[in-house]
Image 1: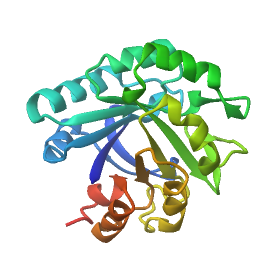
Image 2: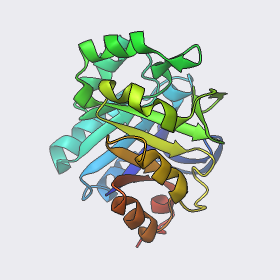
Image 3: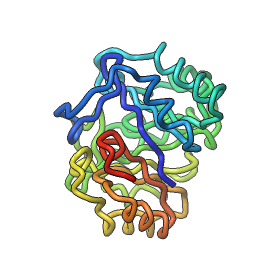
Length: 229
């Protein structure tokens, strides 16, 4: 299944290359929501919150409400969810699931204490854990900090605390270089949990290949540049 993404920065829907260079921006964010209305799921990621540079809370809330009420679209929201209170707040915006990334790790390890407390306050069915990877290692804090951990090695440890994983290939994110299908297969072999693949995906054939191994595909740049027909 293809899942379109709305990445927010400064009140605009943007697409970045490897989380750094802005490739394009769309000011009419709700126009993108209209464009994506026929998809069953939508990802809304607050990049400002993820990078600790403010937040787009009111816009995210409005997007969630309109997606749900006008189109019946399910929404996952991520970006900067690093505390229990914040997770509860975002989960209360009418989101179907929240995406937690950096907060799942502390001191270079899986933060079991945080995750245990999180699942006491938010159902694990509503939690997706983001495993963003650059050069084989997990990255956190808006892809600015690299850990000495590999995604495939921590999945079993994380499974009790989430409904699935969002796995982004940071090296290819926004590049439209094509999906690293070998890496995604490695991840698929590491867990029975649902996986959403992201990073470099540019063709319907790649989306079909991911679906064949049991993964959804979160796609940004290729949709915004109308490469998927």
